[in-house]
Length: 427
Image (cartoon, rainbow, N blue to C red; front, side, top):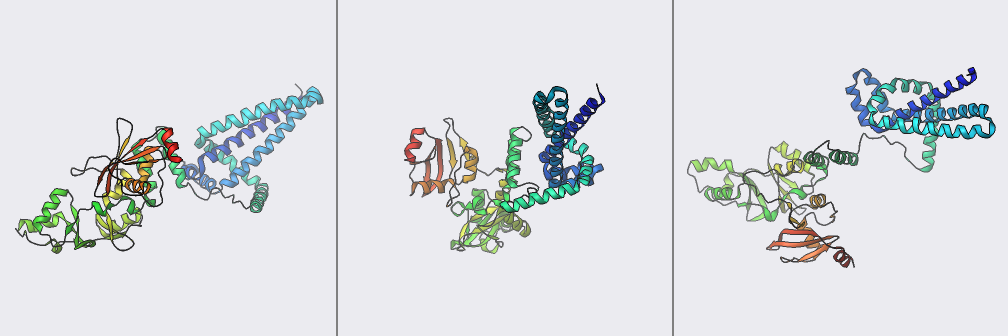
């Protein structure tokens, strides 16, 4: 083998090796993202400054890898063409060079390194970081010129090319959580809890409150003796007190505040003398804000008011925490599930269930601008108050009123209908 041929082969292998390096580094950085790079600062303290630099210069680093990869691939193709043309002639040499280089570049400089980078991104970044910083230093003028050209073209097209402005979006978190559950990394209960935390600040109090019609309340002139009976019957530890009508909530009565008068035999004391100052919240307030206000005021129950100042319902700390951890049952809670699947495949749903929860369980978008609950959806679709047994069709679902009491829809049955019924409804 001549020295020229050996030199050409050596140069070609070096260029292919550099292409392998640039491909793995680019893919590893892209797969890791800024959040992972920040986390690696703590897991690899020996290169903490390097990872901090990379996290703040992702676009510059990707530009280095892309420029370097294209330069070495073009150079490798040129070397291979010259080498094969010299030995096989100008007729066949370029064709052989194209076939050989296409195979080598696609398999050993693209597919293989990118797969390695995706599965071992942390170790790839750790090992390639010192060399990447060196290339960034030596290629700084070229990188600056390329970035300015890209920025100028982006401005002409009206595009923002800053793709690493934030660590991760809310949508990214949701996708990661669902993907983690599908792959078995986390359990379903863990996924629901994490999703609850993510959506916590988007939920309004009006979506989780106990509606006015479902509130247990006590008139302000009720005696301690009668109030104790209400506590025993309801199982609650805190009950709102009203004066003449529900829109005039004057306070909240704690069951422990009845212990003293009961032990002293003062059964005729009015509950108005024992009530505590209530906390009022607007129904539009977000759950995270309500949680902070209730913690600050050290209260476990708040009265929710509408835009006119009337009583819309009440919310407790338990209601808010259930948005994260799911239902919390105690010895007094009704064990009827919000949504239960029947043997025939239909779903028995409580009227107060939020449409977001129904959409998640049935994996179908029940989306309405004017209502939040299943009962409200049925009223909107029906156009009037349904009687028990009446039903409507919405998409591929039949919604049947199961229990209606005093114009209140307590339970509905949701079942999937045939294509014929769905088409008929669409017409």
